[in-house]
Each structure stands twice: as C-alpha cells, then as structure tokens.
Amino acid sequence: MLDEKINLLGLDRAALEKLFTKIGEQKYRAAQFMKGLYHQYESDFDNYTTFSKILRTRMQEFSTLEVPTIVSKKTSKDGTIKWLLQMREGNAIETVYIPEKKRGTLCISSQIGCSLNCSFCATGAQGFNRHLTTAEIIGQVWVAAHELGQSNKNRRITNVVLMGMGEPLANYKRVLPALKIMLDDFGFGLASRRVTVSTSGMVPLIYQLKEDIDVSLAVSLHAPYDLLRNTLVPLNKKYNIDTLLKACMDYVKDKRKAKITFEYTLIKDINDKPEHARALIKLLAKVPCKINLIPFNPFSGNSYERSLPESIELFQNICEKSRIVTTVRKTRGDDIDAACGQLAGEFLDRTRRSNTIKMKVS
Ligand code: SAH
Ligand code: SF4
Image (cartoon, rainbow, N blue to C red):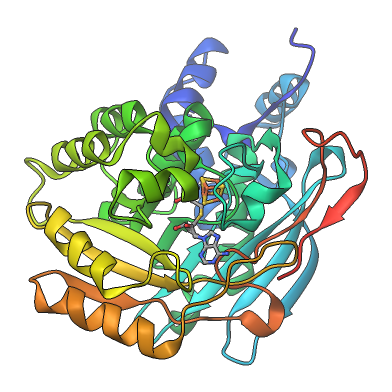
C-alpha cells in the first residue's frame, strides 16, 4: 500500500493504462475514465457508474480525484478572467483566460516562483518555492474549461500557453504528462500547434521536448547580444544565444510550417533601440520564426520602465521590414493584474527565508 494516495487527475493515458492493468482491469478503462474527467468534468469518483461499485471502492483505496479549488475569480473590462487557485501547503496560483475574436487562450503556470532570476520578471524576483505537480498543472486547464463551459462556443479554450509563473522546462517531468493530457483526444484534444511551451532557453530540454512530444515553442530572447542577454536572462551565461538558436533550428527542422515564437520584452533604454531591432532581425534571419514584442510591465521594487509607444512602434517597423512577422502583445487584463509579468499568486517564500506570505502586485 502506498503512503500517499495517487491523484488520478495527474496521470496521462499511458500511466492510467498501467494502473488499470496493474489491478487486473482492461486498458480501455483509462480512456473511459478520462472521458468522464475531461469531457464530462466529473470530479466525484462515486459518479463514475461505468465502473462497478467494487472497482470504485478498490480504486479509492489507493487513489483520489482532487481538482484545484477556486479562491477567487476576477473578470476584466476586456473579458480577461483571472482565477486564484488553491494549491497545497498554503500556496495559491493564478491562471488567466484571454478571450479573442476567434480564439480563447489560457495562460497557465508550471512552478510557484522561479529560480532563474531574470532581471525584469516579477516571478523571478520572488525566488523559487516549488514545482507544481502534474495534477496542479493540468488542474488549471480543468478548472478553467469547466468554468467556461466547453459547450458555449464563444468561451472556449482553443489555446494553452505555459507563460504564467515559472519555467516549464525546469519542471520537465511534471509538465510533460500535462502536455500529453492537453493533446490527448480523451483529454482536452487540443491541436499541437495550439499548445505552447515558453522557455527562457533551457537548451538540453528543448532537444528533449522535441523527442517527446509535438508542441509549439516560444523562446524568451529579449536581447540580440550575449552581453546584454546575460544581464536580463542570467541563464544565458550557461546557454548562450548561439547555442540557443541552434536548438531552435533543430526544433523546427522536419516540422512542416513550424515556427519558433521569439518573445522580446521591451524595456526603456535597455533593449529597445533601433540598433537592437536591426541586430535582432539579422540574428534571426535563418530561423523560421515570428517575433512577439511585449511592452515591459513594471512591478514594485524594480527600476526598469516600459518602452515609449514610439520606440515600440519603431522597433516593430524595423522588424517587419525583414520577412519576420512581428506582433506587439496587447496588454490584456491589466485592471485585474493579469498582464504578462503581473502574475503573482501567494506563496511561502522559502528561497528568501522570509517565511511570510508574499503577494505580488504590479
Ligand atoms: N519562464 C518562461 C515562461 C514564463 S514567463 C519564460 O521565461 O519564457 C512568460 C513571458 O513573460 C516571458 O516571455 C517573459 O519574458 C515575460 N515577462 C516576464 N516578466 C515580464 C514583465 N515584467 N513584463 C513583460 N513581460 C514579462
Ligand atoms: Fe523564470 Fe521566465 Fe521569469 Fe525568467 S522570465 S524568471 S525564466 S518565469
């Protein structure tokens, strides 16, 4: 008997099949169970009546079915919704839904805090608390999809981006099964290109991701030169731009129409000059990609400022003169602190040993 019961929410199809086989059941039980959980949003195991009472009782001896609970929900003027979800050990994390004309994007977190300490990021400034479990990662999608009611066409999750708190590739072994559930037809059935992992550049794991699953990749670049990137994304000292771009080229190789999205946060007077834009397009000339410019979102305790609107426009114009499609990310949900880099949650900060609940605000 296991000490801690397994949460069935965190198991992908292969793991569920293994579990059912182990207790002498047929593999198809896994798909049956997933349909109940991800298509019917049934969170009470007693209601899985396709399973006999004996089987349900047996499963409850070693497993549970726990979905995250909602602490609060805020809706922005622009329709963006932010949920604060309760996690174990007194932590809470935020998940954001951004409705657009033809799609609905859910931005989810992969860790509580982050150890990579990028100088412009509020999550990095909090330090690292802990990895989210697979159940907590996929649980964010479950709660949002359940809340939105998948049947209502206007409020559907069509895209999931791992761009909330944390570095998804630093929590690879828990993120991977969650990605598998997102793509699985018995899970959320999302198309590969509509699930995006955003990384600050954990190079070996970019190669690994390509081996393991077909999802879209976004890379947080933020600078065209190593010296500058070292100060913004300290991980660059380990995996420099050249090494990172090689991994990106490899990632899209043999994938028809695949493009890397390069995220570039525009910070006033730091990385937003025309020379940076020119160096950037030169650097990316051979990589199948698009560029997503993110105006920096300020937060307390950080001295960087957002680039001026004219600098952002000029930067975009220079990039667009190349063949690279360049978009500026619209600030959505800033009235409810749901914009990029404003995601906070509440957590017990272990790395800074303050042991107090910290709330991050922009
Ligand atoms: N760790 C991953 C994913 C989470 S961060 C990564 O770094 O890619 C998601 C995106 O938000 C990244 O592109 C990051 O650079 C950006 N971001 C972080 N803080 C920000 C801020 N204060 N203003 C604007 N964008 C920010
Ligand atoms: Fe971590 Fe990404 Fe923030 Fe860097 S930008 S500190 S990798 S969450």
